[in-house]
Length: 151
Image 1 (cartoon, rainbow, N blue to C red):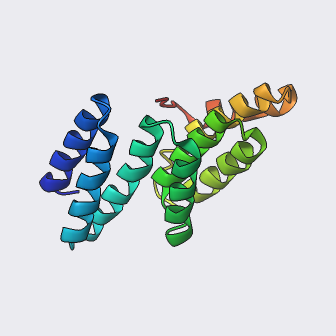
Image 2: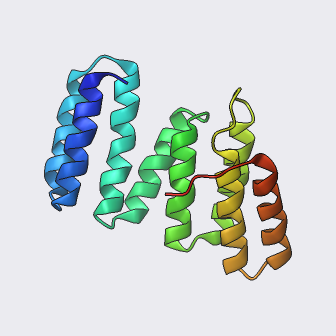
């Protein structure tokens, strides 16, 4: 990501803290149309679901994330984000599947930076569904994979 994207991201976070979601969305759309740097375009496309989340528009965020995943199945950030949104929406069975998809995708990279978190969130969803054996197995896998980071 470029310095320009970092500045944009900071501005979007600031606008969302102030509940200025329409301004944040308009800024992203303007910058997306102007930049030709592919990494920045990807980053901007991931800011849109973030804004929708902040505004409480989780279903729209899920749809935006699914579009990103459909266009780039290896986008681990979008896969992780959709996993969190699915849990928030209460789509726990789908969240479990999304966690498995994230772990499978993460395995294709030299560094598996999302696997432990995927299994942790899978365990959470399984526990909410009262699937305690599945939850324990997922937590065990999370522990095997090392330290996790949680938003």
